Image (cartoon, rainbow, N blue to C red; front, side, top):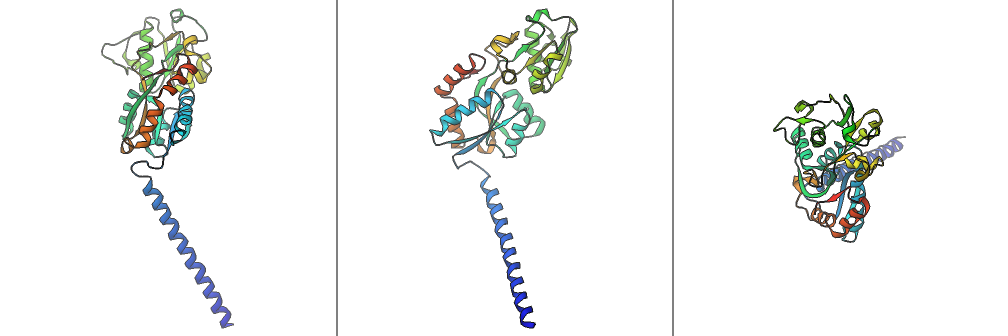
Length: 281
């Protein structure tokens, strides 16, 4: 009986020590994994966040071209303008490609993030769309006009409305005005602020709306054909590649930029989007 108890105790002790040993090993592996994620990238692979639509299509092409340069790219697709920067800051991404400089600047200010612009990509001219009128000047008094509810794209839409001679903004309101900066609204238009990605789906309930090109294309619009008013090609809202400040000089990121801004990518953009997306290089 005593011999059986002694044997059982030895087995139990061995199992306990093995479990403790496994726990320490797992903890060490976790620490090592966390430590390798700090600082510069070094494994020849990038995880890139994009919004659905043209950005996704372009980066998929870049992924194909980058493979020939021994650079592996994983593409993660988002359906809004908030999460790509959050995911980048939290190191779920190495880069993102979806935003303009004014949007990044405002986002960083609002959330105190250390993200940086590492290169320009393309311009998506914002357009005004309507299922009710073909001419922006045919909008009736009191018409409901949709625009994005984030400060940067909302301001961009208001500047576009002014260029279309629908409103007049206060002098000095710059590129990021709000509806409070409308100085003249002679037709008493009602401005409806919505999540940018939702505006195409809400267009039937509006008289017209300013829609970002990526969401317009995703919804089936052809900006050069379907917009009743569109930004000129000298729009200041060029899109950019964004990285964390700590890794902005990484070799893999520079290689990504070289491939993105190549002649092959430019040709793909020109042939695919027929002027609705404009390369910045």
